[in-house]
Length: 63
Image (tube, rainbow, N blue to C red; front, side):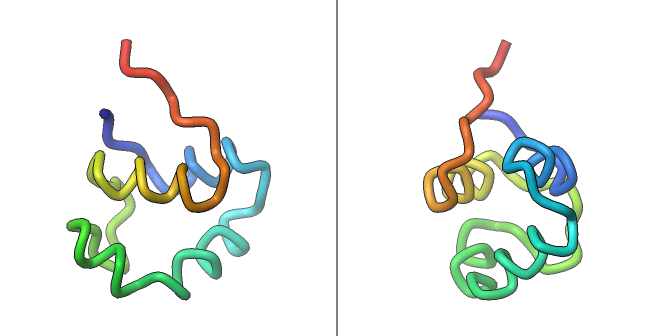
């Protein structure tokens, strides 16, 4: 598992940063539970995995 920036995940999903932020806004409680603060740009690995699973984003393999 790896940490990723929100803009990297938005690019991987093929959406704008604004759209990605709207996606995340609806799941603020779940993301906080996973260790991601609302204004945090670098997301922890657990939050990255959950976002990828929830929105069908291909999870990047750690090198």
